[in-house]
Amino acid sequence: MTEKLAPLTTCWTPNNVTSSVEKSISISSYNMLAQVYVNTTQFPYCPRRYLRRKHRLALTKNLLQSLQVDILCLQEVDCYNEIETCLREKGYQGVFQLRGGTKKDGCAIFFRSDKLELAAQHSWDCDQIRLPIVQPFCHQDWNPYLDVRHKRNNIGQCIWLRWKQEPKVSFCIANVHLFWDPIHEDVKLLQALQAVHEIDEFIHRCKADSDKNEETIDVFLMGDFNTSPGTPVYSLLTNGQVTWQGREEEEMMESSYLHRSKTVQVHNYDSDYHERREEDSWNNNHNNIMSSWSPIFARHATISIPFCFQSAICSVLGKEIEWSNRTEKFTDTIDYIFYTGRCMKPVQVIPCPELLQRYDHYLPNENFPSDHIPLGCRFELVPNE
Image 1 (cartoon, one colour):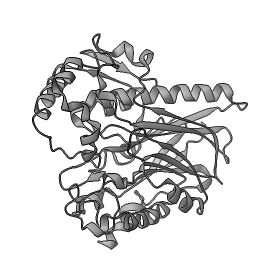
Image 2: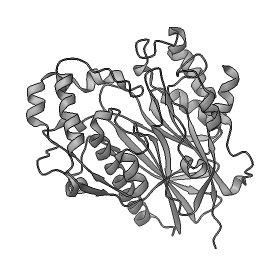
Image 3: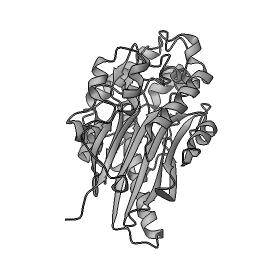
């Protein structure tokens, strides 16, 4: 399988694009799979020796260096010092944000310091709901202090980068890791809504504090969204708004509570699956949960955001890739690179979709350290008309 690894992570498509280094920016997003989520129960098809931290860390370092991108967004980073040392030797500077709770992993953004300059940074805790942002869309009975379903220790971060070769162009790079469970699509939608508003306010602060008059700012939002194309989160980000129907989702959530009060639901939705035992500890007392549970969003509420993003991979290929996360029980696209497209257009992506169609190995394995693959996109500067 080794011969399949290199094209998976380093083959850009289409291959007939010639990009000027000075006029392009390459970006990658990758969920590294933190060691705390790795065990033989979760990945029974992978021999134990290939799941050990030492083996996986060596593969991860080689993979990250092989990408050779300008900006690298990582999720489930539990070895930041080792990764930072590895990438610093290649000319990268990094920013790290640890998630809350007992799981000691987080999100990190790295960028090439010879090409980009860090101007500001910001992070947020998805558990800290900012009511003025979400309240216009919320159900009248929802109380974030009583309904604790959204308390998941998910985080987001963003940085403001100036392009040294193009002083009039700046980038806001945002990196998120949203909640995993498909039953709680409203929690993911809440997290996505908050993330976009955090980014928007960050940009406004940066503009107010800047002594430079940036003429163009492109926003890039990427990470592990744990949601498939066509879901409310995807629609919100790509359309700028989405209508929450409510009834079907609420009935599904309620039935899920009834089911989980009797047994542990086995639903493998990426590597976060087994952390449910800790994060859903509140679910052990079914009566208390049901008495405090209420829908987050009002039925038929039209939820809107200040940005309308496009998917970089979809823009280049005409559709999303077949999968970005592949295990024995789950295979789907749940990772994305979104962009606003004010002055940058996507011209190349990784991985090659044709290779994914032929790929018959579950992840992780002997030669690949995570259950996610890295996504990448090269953007070119659009000339002024």
